[in-house]
Image (cartoon, rainbow, N blue to C red; front, side):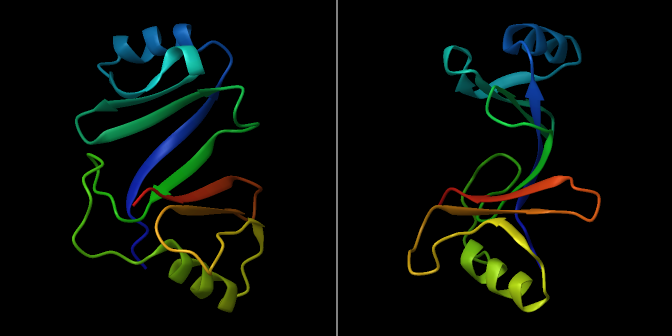
Length: 123
């Protein structure tokens, strides 16, 4: 099962302080808006999202249809197909994609330890 590009979405308390810290580690902002309290940062092929006031906990994020640089892949498994496979396997959902739609959609699940996993398709 190919889930697409991977990143870690961090629930941060101070987006500006977090940005400065991760820039010290060599990350650069490649998307987002500090004034809207979110940033996407990248260091080589490593991507993190900084989100102030949007998530309760840190979250694993997968983006079907994207490579690590957010380029659209020519072929990928649609988020709704991934959802159907996971439902068939008995996975419980926190939120679900509307299976009657096409294009961007998302769903979320929790792993056995309660860690959130977001499957977020933008294409």
